[in-house]
Image (cartoon, rainbow over all chains, first blue to last red; front, side, top):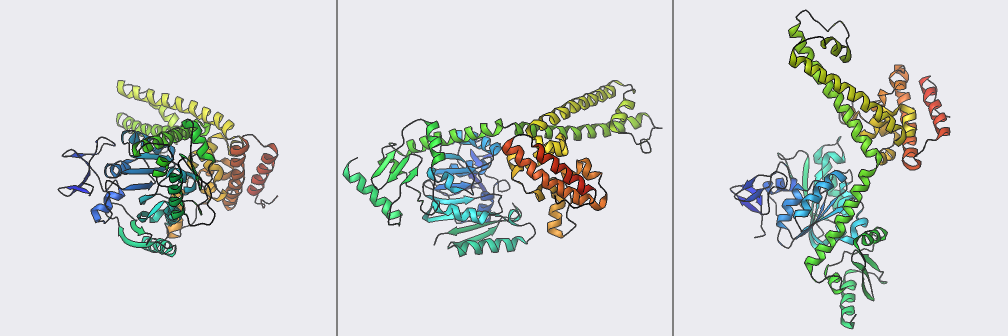
Length: 203
Length: 312
């Protein structure tokens, strides 16, 4: 256990169902790639596996749908979200899943929640902010040396005028200039439009 | 604290922090420095307050392994660490949410959104009722009579037929609720947004608030954004395809903008938005009417409407 679980080509996670009306398959929770960018990435193929020991800092937790699946796999999820309405939903999800730590804070100001965190294996970023690159960089202080960053880049939040391909290339370049190494990049189409999943590490 | 533990702590800290002088670092469970760790003592609310006071320097900060809290004597195992941390984080989140929703601007925002939604629903129902009415009255045509929805309802009220009459009655009642809600929105906007309301009227001010998301967000917007708030689709098509930029969004609903001559309308919108930007900040920070500002702002908007420059 610990590896991603598939049943007849359908990605699932093991945990108590009925979080947001997700379907169940042989008692497992179906993880829909059209609703979750991380699920979409697994459908496209990814080396990032969530394991029982994985500690995750999840930025842009929103209503906690993806977070709930991540929590089914990981040891602990630090879920950061700033907006009050989604946070209300996230709290309900976190009440049932004891390995979610809901943090109501602005992901672009990590110094505020820094005293709450421990070093993490995976920094997952899914925020609709023009400065997603800066957010990724500033939050990389929480990453273990061996850890990875998974940046779900919303190219349209950065610049709607530019070609998504150029926005992605520019973002990758900016992060590599800061010393991060790009390991992989995948577009999330057809599940999500103009979203790129960029995998980075410190070395 | 026994000697060996302090040494172990120091080892851990020195291996992670590559600085000559070791600064004290504060974490949610306590303070850590070269002499060891001082666990936090007290209840969750004090712990949350303490957390707000912790200043972290991004340059020197190091995330700390949870085992430090263990050595610190703050917890006994991993599950207790997570439980205490969660208790703290739930408290903070619930506190922030309740503070957010207690803001009076937040209720005003829901009220004005309800108002706009009711307008849509009333229009939709009226349109449908007219289609129905025409079947019953083949000679009726609305086309050249410029009948408003309200007058249309008055005509249709005379039509009999149980279900039809009942629905018309419902639409009428919806209109009444809508009018009451509108007055209430204007009234509350006058107290939550006194300066903005004085400039453009309570209803339009409330719609600006709704477009921005909250009074705080409205106060943080630059005037150029306030000017085109509500014209997002035109703005994005302008940015993407280079079509003409929108001159006004929600503020078009204000009479001085839509009554202005076409040549100066953009100018009026720009000056008005600039003054609204200031007004929103007064509303947010000072929460009271500023008479001096209002006089000069009103004069500037009027001057722009006369085709003169806005500079004081």
